[in-house]
Length: 146
Image 1 (tube, rainbow, N blue to C red):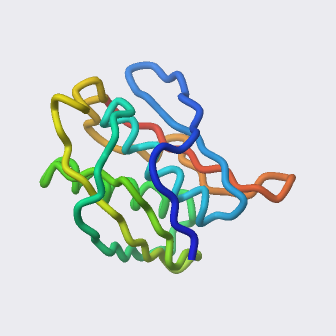
Image 2: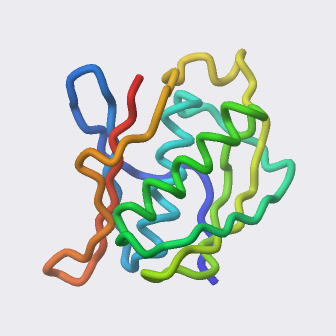
């Protein structure tokens, strides 16, 4: 099992009225974990997140890995919007075309620490990616509405 925690490297993508992130990993699971953590860094402005609780996520697949990646980030976004919880640690337990199972270590969003983060409104399917590169590594990308 691969478990990653904040901070993680990502490339900020320029997009009109939106923001985006792109990450790379040695495997699809690593790229997906990095993508969720890059989203967390967007909403926290890079401020530290203390792991307080764990949640398991299970999401169905079927529409391709890029769609599944968006759905995973949307699930993380829902936790931020509804409960003000932000991923600090991500473990991808299972990932294939049929779906994904992840364990998130979550911490509270603290306005004094995370106030520089983006006010993300939605995660879009536009330009989404979770795919292998010619060198065998994986790239994951999402664009967010701000």
